[in-house]
Length: 89
Image (cartoon, rainbow, N blue to C red; front, top):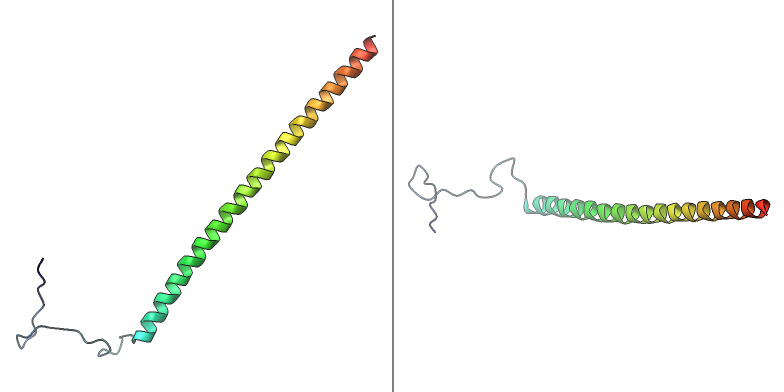
């Protein structure tokens, strides 16, 4: 690999010194922005994990309720059939 540095008017390698330009951020500002970005990503990941967990729990409860309704309907139908058979005797 090879690195080529830009040359200035004087022929020397051109470098940028952080903080020379009025729009440059100081190291504290850069670190603070990085910390905020990292915290935001972590919060989003935690939020997504919580949402997925709650969604899975909701789906599980819905399936339980569905099975309960099916069982109740089967029991009701069996009871009606039994009563019809008793009435036929």
